[in-house]
Image 1 (cartoon, helix red, strand yellow):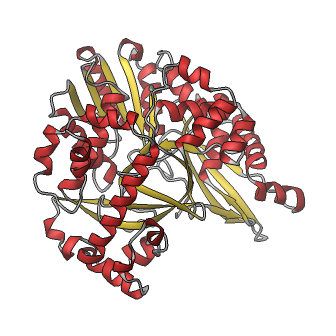
Image 2 (tube, helix red, strand yellow; image 1 turned 45 degrees about the horizontal axis):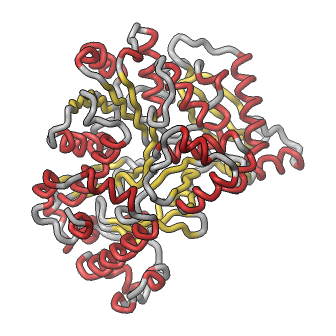
Image 3 (cartoon, one colour; image 1 turned 60 degrees about the vertical axis):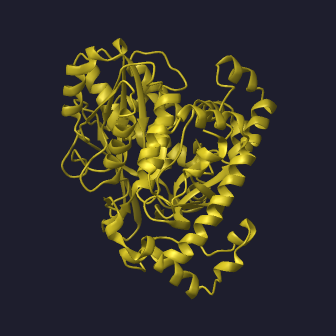
Length: 515
């Protein structure tokens, strides 16, 4: 396929024959474009696509047509990407919750969707996300790209164990369906979808491991960690098979990544375990690459690099993304997305905190801080020339404790240390309450690993580390500690593995009570 012939397939407004095109789609040619074309090319193509999508949505989607009318926007006056940047952002409150489902669909027709996925949402109220053939085509291309050029499924007979929950959650279906379509293209790939059921996952692995050269575990980080640790205890020899991991839904630090890889008994490599960034609304938006993992690892070791690159003592998640597939902007430190995935969305604000960093800037910083030679030595120099995206977490997903914003990522940063990784699962739940005198207190409930008993020494060590980490990375908390005559240490409660109160098996990760 020629360059423009490849790119023309990614037109959400013309869906005829897309799934037939999928089997003719040459992923190696697309990957070659990623290596050969600079990020300016992908940004230009992304801008053109975003403008075309805007005009199609402004014409064919009743809800967005009304949204523009209410904001006194004349679509024909939006001619350039500069004009586009003045469009009012949409979000769950002013768009998703303000218009009926059918009015947010192409031509106001839900019935033309091939699949409707359901998400629970942070409020607990379910949301519905129709999907058509374009979304499945696009998702399949993205998964084929990851599976082939990061996990090399074309070289190894591979068992893909999908540990995302099915049911109402989008992640299970959104992984199973494109993975199955990839497998039907002739790769030696077999899937088993076990949901987030550890017993079933280990049963499948024990029965099937001998028949495969590679196993890829896919799921929430804490769940995959639990599978690795419990499997090791039950005699699974992970190192007998090439093992790879793919995560979504939450972040972790590089100590955590290397701990989990070490638990498998395999040597660490830059494609051992990758994290992805997705949502119910937009499916897969960005993902780690060997280069992004290397840069993040360097920044964790080099505080000066971290401060200059991220302007923070806290290490964010770091992904690469393709502007042609997901046009992303950063406004007031929040990310805006334009995409036809799920439902067509224009400048949609998930209220995720993050920023865009150019590929060129990453290259410059690696050279300036003398990491470029190690990049070449480790064989990751010929990376995709795509921009980077930092992710700090949900900007509206915090606990406000005495005017200090406490993010789950802050607690993750404290727990992801070697002394605690072997004793806790990684799951925790924060809540704020009041003492009898109405002073606030912050409580952090933490799940222990199987057969690990709670004791005061461990709880105190975790409490001390959380306080130290908050003082290091949270200036609001540090100011309060220095100026407020209150006991601001969090209460740490350790709970047995899978305790029914907070950590029942099968639940989606949740870090703030009633959030």
